[in-house]
Length: 299
Image 1: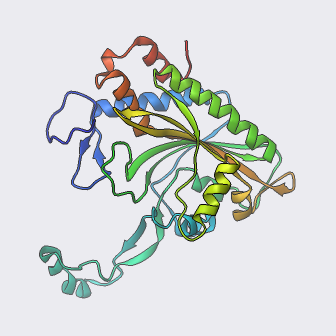
Image 2: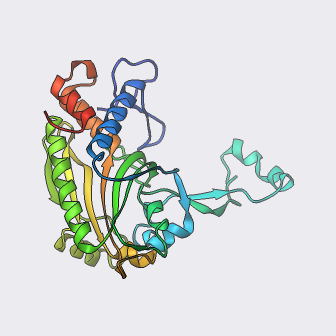
Image 3: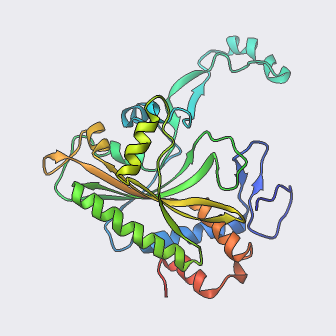
């Protein structure tokens, strides 16, 4: 699926780089991603989403407060920087050319790399009592430390998300609605879709308990499709967080602890699935697929 050649290419397939899980996207691939953006925007146009573009970094304190550091430390990328002066750097600079530990004095900053697009949204709700559901449509470049060469399992990737906060009843119904709607949309793109109960890669001694509870309550549902021959991956997920973020960020809905749900889209993975299903040249795709991917609906 991935083309590791350097130089001009004529199709949409990404180019490998020197490190696993990081790829260069040629213009045809970005054209597919832009089609998907328009399709998701069209799908969500009938709800009053507040649309935000999220930066690729987030306050370290926000991620700590959200509980991500405790549960997924193996995926988190931290931002370090050099705190010294030019005189001190004179001692370390030669190590760059010799392969030495020039980074030995780097210190952690107040930022980390963003692991999911939705986290900054919850911090905007601190202290609020919602009288009606809040809705956000967001996109961000995210990072997760997964050193792998498996197609679609990227360390740097684009994630679009639809997020809501409100009552438990609202969040459960909203998640079910979007799960069905996105499954139908992906099917309309000519993709072979399955919806599976899943769990997150929790870390530490309590991981099996967390995973069992998440599966038992069906809090995470993945929409899975083939991204290359013999490889099926989740390209979207429908998630209920219950009151986790309401408690962590101290927001309520009509006086009760707020609940949240989100619908997440892996833009690169959906693009890869489309290339796998219909070929790397968009101009050869079926007309109904092109209409659906951009229009956000099935004809």
